Amino acid sequence: MKLDILAIGAHPDDVELSCSGTIAKEIENGKNVGILDLTRGELGTRGTPEIRDQEAKNASKILGVSTRINLGFKDGFFTNDKDHQLEIIKILRKHRPEIVLCNAITDRHIDHGKGSKLASDSCFLSGLQKIETSIDGITQEPWRPKNVYHYIQWKNIEPDFVVDISNHIDKKIESVKAYASQFYDAESKEPTTPISSKNFLESIKYRAADLGRIIGVQYAEGFTVERYLAVDSIFNLI
Image (tube, rainbow, N blue to C red; front, top):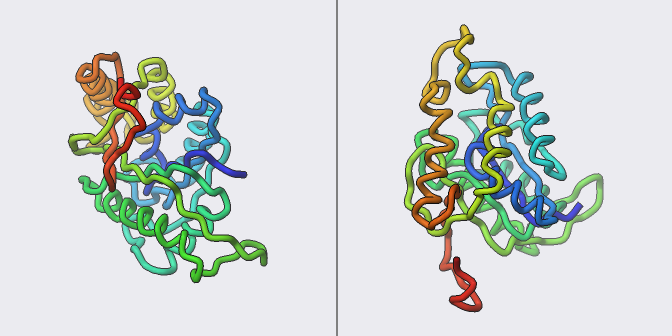
């Protein structure tokens, strides 16, 4: 299946926390969107990989994504090397996305920066003719996404552009809450973590509200870019 957008996250829930409003909006606009998780989040303090697997399925159903894939890389220990790049290249060539959304370039969790660079490098390499890959014995053709954008995560990085998600904030929050093992639950007996506090859960909405305030809408999500943004007309900006 050809995708319009492939959102890549180092861990299940990275995508939901960071760009699910944008995803929900584009799906409503008729775009095919997929999610690629690099790891199962098995080093997470709360929950289990099996629980995270089911939560990811639940979140995918809420958002209405066309496909979701988990590559099963080692949480905390995957590297940006040939073996890992080739696995991502196979997915890129199979689904041929126009746009790739990936982790923040720098962030609190080491996997976010690593995942960002790994995804970006793989997008470039995927377009090289002399890198040969195949799936089920069928040789794949090169494919390079038109654009790679990095979503914002823990750190309040200055965005290069923002997307109005005012009509999709509720779906974003619902998809995040699908990961019940990870986030605030007053009844939970699990150890506390930086993302399990009530403040963190509330921050998802108030950070989106602050970005929205700056551009004159209710809620927004921010992204950074690897190259200059270009528009056909200055009237295309809102």
